[in-house]
Amino acid sequence: MRQGHKRYRRGRNSVTKQIVNLISIDERPAVVDTRERLGDWEADTVLGKQGTGVLVTLSERKNKLYLVKRVLSKKADVVKDAIIEMLTPYKEHVHTITFDNGGEFAGHEAIAKALDTKTYFAHPYSSWERGLNENFNGLLRQYIPKGTDLRSVSNEHIEQAQTRINLRPRKCLGFRQPRVVFEELRQAA
Image 1: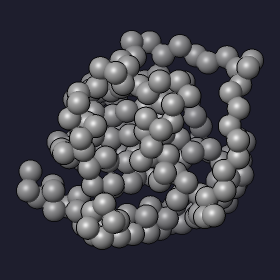
Image 2 (image 1 turned 180 degrees about the vertical axis):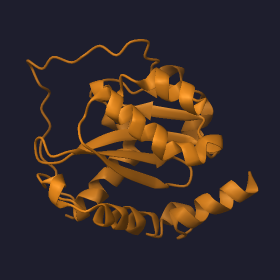
Image 3 (image 1 turned 90 degrees about the vertical axis):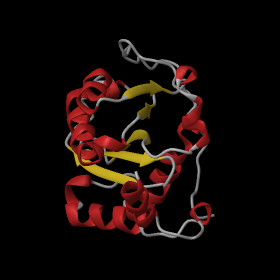
Image 4 (image 1 turned 180 degrees about the horizontal axis):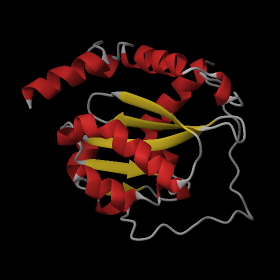
């Protein structure tokens, strides 16, 4: 199979930071689940070899646009700044952002304020609630395999991977490309 999967085991002794004022995915508007409007995003991080950096990833639920940015660490302030920078050009098309429960998203309130949006958090250990982003992260691993030293990966290579994913025709979009569909929807809005 194209994407090999290992069995996932919950960490028994892992200590997670509490994220202050998080809003559960249960309170997210129903329109997000229907994928009828432009501007509902999912966020995640993809780790490189330990200590070599992190890729912050965002995907838009309606048209499947995928954004990737390399940051130096998984610290909440660094990830917050990256998300704000990535979505600022699309600010008028950011209604909601759904995160997992990673401590790197502790800056969600600052993100919501900067982008004038609402943020929600999936249930712990429920990656399928943000399945689009998880799927795209799997596609990204074709270009940047797990365990890669991100210091040795150029920004051009990351951008090329993002472009290839965004120009890949999707059956759910009538075999059109996410980048093209996003621009069409942006012009119509």
